[in-house]
Length: 445
Image 1: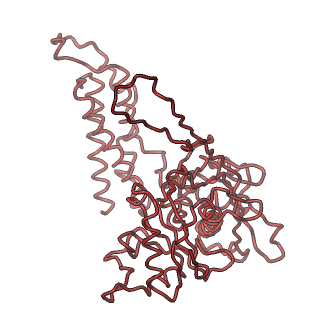
Image 2: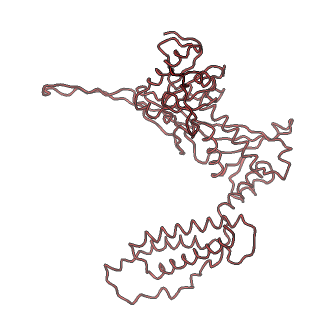
Image 3: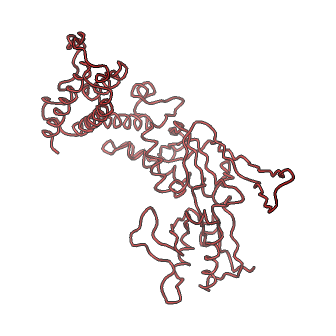
């Protein structure tokens, strides 16, 4: 849509908003019509903001009919509207809205009309994005950063909310546990109850003559208590010195990659020094042991083990389960064939959400993040429902700190991204949601 059409649409929307404001100021909107009026105002306001965003990205062609056209009737424009309504109407028919309701809708209308002097949301984000990048590469100081809306201090800057969402969104695309698990955002620790002792019921054909025996039911609590979590990215000074490049995008891309590598390691293995996660997937998933001998040279033995593993979780888990395989396991399973010669691993007609195959009727995902740390050639297989893997992100905790001296000898600048995070597989021992199988060698019962 060209600029002329956008301006015409903007002008039409403003005229309708003016009309609705006039009706409200004259008390011509009844209570039963208020919901419809509010919905229309919200729709027009959103459309006006979208038009303002689009116009902000277009080259200037003149100021006539721009976003501020028709803006801001003064409070004195309609003094005559305050005169008492002399016509007495029937009380049941009148049902005028309250002053509070009227003011609320008028405020929304004012927001839709008043776009002059205000940057569009996209323009604001672009300005903050550039200020963020300029601050962490040292182009602006703390004072200027704060004046542009950034929270900074002690050499670190809080990542703006919309930028931290970009990092988390990227993490969801690259980290399968973020995509399949359950994410919670809060500022407080969260406790999850876990059933550790079931109640027992009694049956009896005769009428009860004695007291019903008591049975205990016990719960344990597992607490998600976020700990400090950081990742490191480096960018060469030569790259930062090239002013023609989009520095903010370069920095964000490097931070995303570094953050996701560190986060995925923490969630899957959690065995780094000083960054141990006792609730990591590899530690909390229940180890599966097949009843028969498994030899990778025998397709039938592996097939039998997979069938047994698939039927190990309870039915409620199986209904929402999927396979997660590393490349070594995928290679071994791709060689399996049914009795009539068809591959056991069936390709999907249309890959989606990381799923390319089905195995024994369940979706399959290929993830090298689950590799055995010591030997990536070992086939690793997970099967279960990953919704029981809980991830807690602390709101507004993500920060970035610039490290200059640490990498000065190699002409690089380091960026340390810091966050508060906890991630654990949480479940009752009566209903394990995920099973793990590593085929290290031929196994015997």
